[in-house]
Image (cartoon, rainbow, N blue to C red):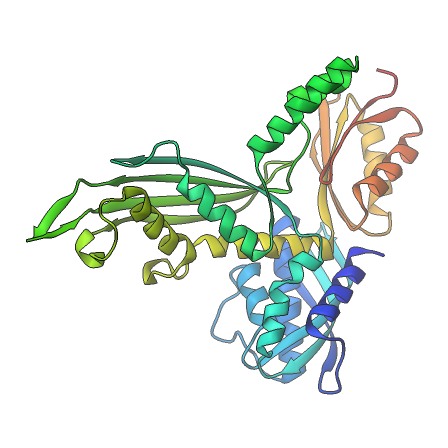
Length: 397
């Protein structure tokens, strides 16, 4: 079953399958630009057009199309109407015009979705192979705080887990690999021991990288018998694909000065708890200043990218060691004519070193690997294979 069908079934299970009140429409969304960006915008425009066509209202007449995440939120849960379910019928990228097109068949219902439907939509990720996430945080906070505790990392992991992500700890995975490497060495399997010890195996789909700088002031007494501390904090958040290092999203929470007098009920004698309180308010968006830019905005962008890749197909990077131009060009033509491949883009060519191409496809990495190996007729073999990256080297070398 392809990913588009999986998404349709998952949405059907989450939001209930076709009702008499629903309107089924078939629409096309188009966007110009680099394929990786244009495909998300094209899908967003298709979803927007589905709502407009289905309920007769342009829900975004006052809002310019800025990004897929905004569009996706609006068309899936609108006060005028919403997409109950949809299926990607076809998609393509016209290299000559630089236009990406996505045709969808969608069921649109008037009015706002019921609360239980919104909650089920939030659970959609768990039903669709919830992505594995690792949080990496560099926290630099001066003052009387515990330098060994990473408050930001703990908060982000807690919030991400509640959102539906699978959270993995790199330190724990590293300790596990170290034990397995020792076991393999004891059993005489040198290669397995070296692989485990090197820690090169992929352990996550996304990595959330956080940088936190701030300070906790000394205790002061602005009023008699009233002690407080000031806290200053700034947070930068990024999400990247672990396999490729490609940036998925970034959110900057500007440095903010929190005066102790504004929240005198906080435990001034527990600096770590003060930092945790303010970081929670910033990351969750409960403070007005962080209503739009917060950790949940980063999570939404990750979710939107994840769902897009599941529905439109993943972008897989193919690398080839010492491949000649004629062979590479021939392979590109074969891939372009392969079903479930939307586009092929040559990234780099170097006949003596490595050449790389990028493929957007609904095929799994294993299926794509089979297509490439069949075309290359035994001249190359797989050296590295992950969900989003395949590396080929000359056979027998």
